[in-house]
Image (spheres, rainbow, N blue to C red):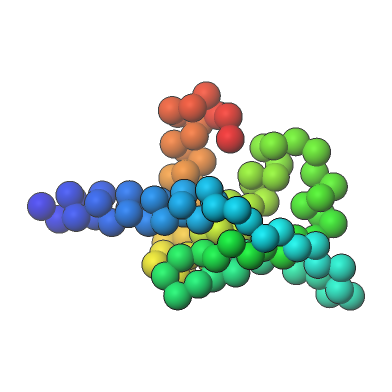
Length: 104
């Protein structure tokens, strides 16, 4: 039963990320002297607000952009424990590679 609970929790968190990514996003370019890339966190899920730097906008391929955004959205999800964030990123990348022909 513990495995079922774990799998359900993982899929719940993935659904939260999917829902956040599917909303109309408020994408802002950070032109400050110390620009940072961040997907703002809400109380239980990532918000629709992103701040991106020139690094993101200079990437011309979808894979590169996804690789930059994935850690941002996972970090913005307060329901994902910080010690598990890298595992979530790896799991998502592996799932895309194995089930969707590695197309983001």
